[in-house]
Image 1 (cartoon, rainbow, N blue to C red):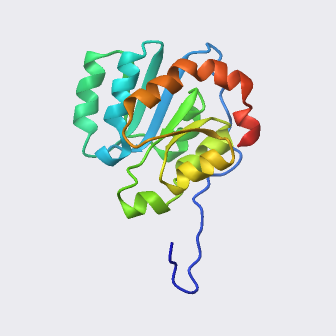
Image 2 (cartoon, rainbow, N blue to C red):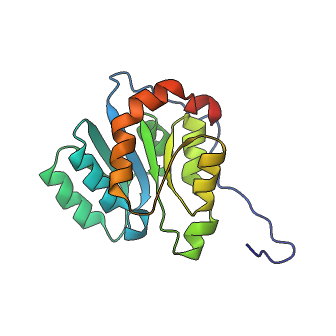
Image 3 (cartoon, rainbow, N blue to C red):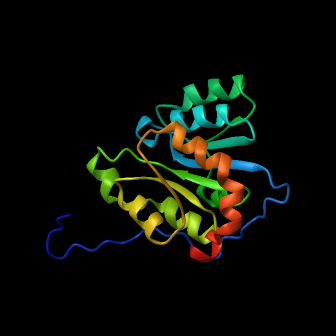
Length: 178
């Protein structure tokens, strides 16, 4: 990537004193908190959760998909739409989950180059993360073994992750890797 002379990259990393609220029920909860738009592959993740019935998907935020997600959540109790939440509530909500979603369409230049603040949030909370192959975020997740990397928009890869999550998590210390 080309960066003009003098350009500084400042990662958007949250305050490191976010508390991790343990998921004591050992529920399988996938969480996404952010802009609700199609280049985040949220529809594909909802499809995966609908097919893998041992999981619940919490979505929070606002954007073009808000109404569609709200409608889907009324039809399926495992799709939970939390609406827009204040940033200071992110650690409490995300910290109760098992796995964070941060998938971005790499055909968009901004998505390929940015390291989402979700990586910092997942790291601080010690959560594994699902990222997209072909993005800087996906490269970092793979390099530091902080979760899983999937092909763009591939619901079946997400299903495989959800099905094997407890076994893989028992063998990999994602919290330590973060």
